[in-house]
Length: 273
Ligand SMILES: *[C@@H]1O[C@H](CO)[C@@H](O)[C@H](O)[C@H]1NC(C)=O
Ligand SMILES: *[C@@H]1O[C@H](CO)[C@@H](O)[C@H](O)[C@H]1NC(C)=O
Ligand SMILES: *[C@@H]1O[C@H](CO)[C@@H](O)[C@H](O)[C@H]1NC(C)=O
Ligand SMILES: *[C@@H]1O[C@H](CO)[C@@H](O)[C@H](O)[C@H]1NC(C)=O
Ligand SMILES: *[C@@H]1O[C@H](CO)[C@@H](O)[C@H](O)[C@H]1NC(C)=O
Ligand SMILES: *[C@@H]1O[C@H](CO)[C@@H](O)[C@H](O)[C@H]1NC(C)=O
Ligand SMILES: *[C@@H]1O[C@H](CO)[C@@H](O)[C@H](O)[C@H]1NC(C)=O
Ligand SMILES: *[C@@H]1O[C@H](CO)[C@@H](O)[C@H](O)[C@H]1NC(C)=O
Image (cartoon, rainbow, N blue to C red; front, top):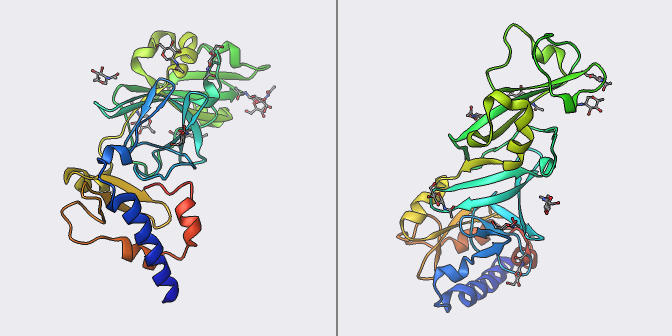
């Protein structure tokens, strides 16, 4: 119990200091960052150890390195450059870091969105690659820059692969890569896939699912990675569990469940509220 009480004391100190007596508008607590040409603001947030991460949603944390915005996606947390975030139509354009600046890129993995509240845009088109095929239909053109010895590699618009041939049986790997429809001429996939992949693809984020009720009540949604819970940051400076019309602050509940060392909790770089 004494442990709990000390959490309570430290936490209320922290919250009253950082929120309660702070009359600044939420926008200063959900700071906008600029990284290269990209503006990063809610629901995205920048991993920054020297700043309390107060706003944004789990999985939407980005890094800013040398003027480039870097996003990891689930799966093996493959990394992507974020070329653009459009806050009007809720889209982001990302490019697989492995393919950037390569004229003949060999995609190494599928895209994985995991459980992130992201969707492929309807303006994307999936390219389907079959790499290192040891046998193949003789008349289908292959990608010259990826051929090795007698092995051939192929690119198709997904679901438009040459029929009557079992690519999966004859090739080493299939990888599906989204590109922007406008970046590729489907009659010249072999000549154009490299450029198209460098142009990246679009994802829609829409409203983060469970953040909707919070946002509609005028709050900013935050996710605490340690408590694994969503919080709503309201204009009156109170953090609530559901939305800004709710009566209860969740802080005490949250501490009760939290076995983490307080120091670590406050300084944790992923405190991704
Ligand atoms: C920023 O935009 C300018 C003009 O469009 C472009 O020349 C420059 O390469 C961009 N910088 C980055 C880091 O993308
Ligand atoms: C991290 O935050 C500090 C203090 O606000 C700021 O000076 C610095 O530029 C930030 N770093 C990044 C990578 O955003
Ligand atoms: C965002 O997307 C909208 C709709 O496609 C477009 O009109 C607008 O110019 C875009 N904004 C930026 C900053 O690119
Ligand atoms: C691609 O190459 C250009 C020119 O060499 C360079 O300015 C740019 O930073 C490179 N982009 C990436 C993402 O490495
Ligand atoms: C591309 O592939 C992804 C993942 O398999 C799928 O969710 C998406 O709908 C596909 N997009 C198109 C335009 O077919
Ligand atoms: C084909 O396989 C060889 C040997 O494993 C590998 O070095 C090469 O990168 C592969 N090529 C492609 C396009 O996957
Ligand atoms: C050709 O591809 C097969 C897998 O399909 C791979 O085992 C082999 O090493 C490749 N050959 C060359 C010369 O890369
Ligand atoms: C990529 O996804 C396709 C189906 O969309 C699947 O057949 C293929 O095995 C996947 N490739 C890898 C490397 O996981």
